[in-house]
Length: 291
Image 1 (cartoon, rainbow, N blue to C red):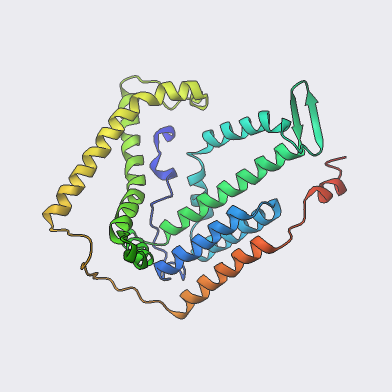
Image 2 (tube, helix red, strand yellow):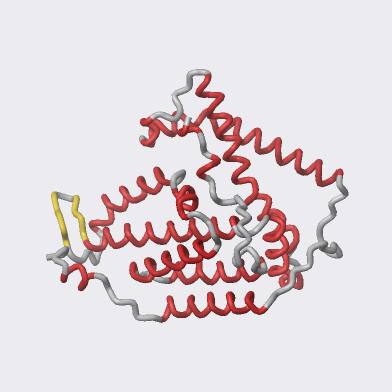
């Protein structure tokens, strides 16, 4: 039954109240700091920089008192897709120029320094993105994130940007991730009980996975639309009115540590962008990996 337990591997949208110093930060500070970190890793094209960034994420996870093993679960669901992407890069990036050092060549297929470099860089970036996104939701409630996004977007109201509505839509979509995973899990169990070929080892094959999961898409979307409709009726029944003039019960107040975290994240972003990161090729040559 482990093949059907999707919810335990969904880390985005889950809140884990550990009471750490990260949890007590202002949600605006966490969102700004996370934005700076995402920009830092997006513009850093060095493997060494990505490794350092991943270590920083793991340190933040430790400070948040969140188990790293649980954080790694968010990587399991997307592992088949990642393997497919890496295989495509492994097969076709070997002919890209500049190729660098050629490790192996057989006809049109060859393994080069550039292909391995791009694979490693993509893997580290994606791993950091998943960890960082999961940490934001693990250390902040949906209400806190909603108020934080709304406060950050409030200056854009002057150009008619609906900050409150955008924040609400974003947080509802984020909160629905574990809900949809639970719904998908129930549908898979129901289909498997009726003899459907779901959750077997052949699911790693893209053709088998597409054939098995296609009957699950329609009921999943129907249930998602039904839940969305129920949510709309519930909000209207409670007299929800968004837009200008709406007040908030929760008032966010920044402390000194919030400013320190934002400034530290900004400086870290600048450091990651401007620092002349060395190439790992000389290191690989010294250990004899590249001849």
